[in-house]
Amino acid sequence: MPVAKQAEISPAEGKLGVLLVGLGAVSTTFIAGVEAIKKGFAQPIGSLTQMGTIRLGKRTDNRVPLIKDFVPLAQLKDLVFGAWDIFPDSAYDAALNAGVLEKELLGQLKEPLRKIKPMKAVFDQTYVKRLSGTNVKTGKNKFELAQQLIAEIAEWKKKNRCSRLVMIWAASTEIFLKPHAVHKTLDSFEQAMRDNHKAIAPSMIYAYAALKSGIPFANGAPNLTVDIPALMTLADKNKLGICGKDFKTGQTLMKTIIAPGLKSRMLGLHGWYSTNILGNRDGEVLDDPDSFKTKEESKLSVLEYILQPEVYPTLYKDFSHVVRINYYPPRGDNKEGWDNIDIFGWLGYPMQIKIDFLCRDSILAAPLVLDLALFLDLAQRCGMKGVQEWLSFYFKSPQTAPGLYPEHDIFIQLMKLKNTLRHLRGEDLITHLGLEYYD
Ligand SMILES: NC(=O)c1ccc[n+]([C@@H]2O[C@H](COP(=O)([O-])OP(=O)(O)OC[C@H]3O[C@@H](n4cnc5c(N)ncnc54)[C@H](O)[C@@H]3O)[C@@H](O)[C@H]2O)c1
Image (spheres, rainbow, N blue to C red):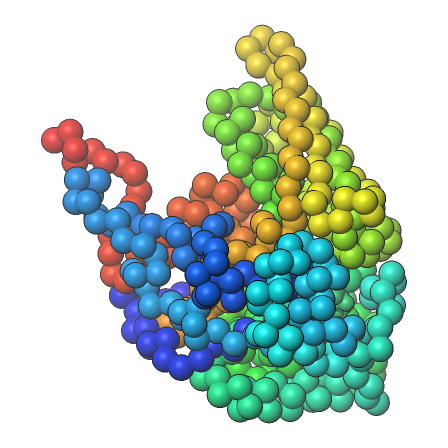
């Protein structure tokens, strides 16, 4: 991802097409939200690109512009949405079905939402066992399906008069896949697509089609997808940004806020038990053990990396970390996440923290989709290619360069993101040393 200080940034001219794989709860809440904000019905709460500021220079300089005024981001009025889904429902019907936003609000957004009809999906039930749908492409093999996507993307771009595109995976979580030998090189990957190899999941076919079409790609689910050497090489070769995995919302967001605080005070941890009840389609998909395994891996890694038991064995060696998700239909998208945290302090005295987060999954995820679309597009216009680690802030399981451990601490992630923006604009990085105030 190297990029020069004060990089040349080409302007955000023309329309930016946001291609969403999956037109479910997260995607429709995102699209409807942008339309509502455009009409002045609501504020973009939760979006760093729209509401965040960035301090520049010294604390005494009083330079604190909005991020969107500091870097040239695409404007909301220039966003155009496209999607694929295995169900043919328009964004309006899919949003009603997801049940996240009130009917009254959706009624006011009917016109733009009705126009968004999902393209036929690349789907295989082997990878998402709990779903089956009819709006699905057919083809001789996975390579041919990828070619269909590539042709469709080119046509969509032309029809919607977009100057640039980004693609975001907001479709269901696929079953757990380990990296396979066929993922190693682009040649072996393409051959495996022709051979209909099991190691090539639908999400990889979309990512391949995006990267072949010159489109940066973000992965909002925990699937392996673009986190494989073949697709990382393709991204590098075509000078495109990629990032993932798994939007950081709900319980993991809380974990990456609280764990760094406990560690900063050198408080120990005996165990962290997390459980969720969730009743949306995502919850239904995650009720399948193979899909849950993918999610579990993504959720479990967070504490190990933040707490560093190998560096602080007295505090964090062998802590117990359990994560459960229970599908409970009455709750719909309004997830409840409980955490029981067993900590210990001075002289080893035990204490407990209980968190009961009554959250709304898609309300937390939607602004992340917006920020990722805008920042990935910015990265593209700055010539930033490959893994965009500065966007780790948005992910539960941040993708990094091979061999590099991910940074999970949300405060470090935010500092990294803002310093990247300062770097791009040729501003001094902020280290918080601040000795100059006491000279
Ligand atoms: N909401 C959150 O807070 C959150 C956080 C982190 C990750 N995620 C992930 O984001 C994804 C979307 O979540 P959601 O709540 O919108 O789920 P959802 O079930 O409401 O929507 C997913 C949609 O993807 C479609 N789909 C599945 N496979 C597809 C394919 N191969 N091609 C095209 N469409 C396909 C489904 O038909 C469904 O409509 C899930 O993987 C979820 O785990 C969500």
